[in-house]
Length: 293
Ligand code: NCD
Image (tube, rainbow, N blue to C red):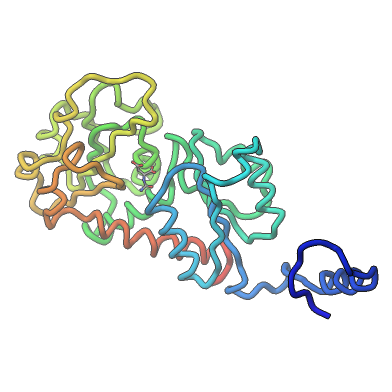
């Protein structure tokens, strides 16, 4: 007898329950997993369009199955903690976890409790390493090299986890880093060497890569009242950007705030290539982590 509905235990014998539990005993999810039986959990505790969908694409492209977390409808609303949510998903038997969280350096806490592979998809304002991987891959493809490139970060630099992760990878690969930003948004770090530019015009004349950044309002504790237009990559600035330079933005961008429509339409702007490269970079990363190659 197989179940038609399962509503309660009425009419079931102890034998029937026993035979059901025997079938459960026979299931073994955890040995000799075929690529298409790997399940990768995507746990985003913060909004995301491209990173989340890009990881979904990458998971499918490498032959595994994505499992997404219903952030808005989850038991976080019932008081379950971030770490207990991760332990719950780990206990379900997923092969790896892709996690984004709003606290800076939250991955350190997770590493202490999670035994399966973990991929950082953004942690507060401190890091977003797969974005840096796809950005630097894009620089390599579009400019032919990374070492010796002059990469200018514009605008709200200190709150940008994308910028912080890029500093790490660009420094490792021998690129030079320039900053053009209001002093309130200048990153403080003894770890990296920066060139500072007071005007965007001077900065873009130096740069082979111009990286505009979104104003990270959600991370500001005080409202700033300086003129953001001084740091806007717009039509006037476009004329000063080197003819063979590239213009990047991790996105989402706010049109006519940090970057204008004419810049977005310029052939030097490679934002959509960044998005496409993101899927490729994350596919290879997942294949390595799941040991599929
Ligand atoms: C960035 C992020 O979430 O840090 N977006 C992204 O992942 N491409 C940048 C941002 O939100 O400004």
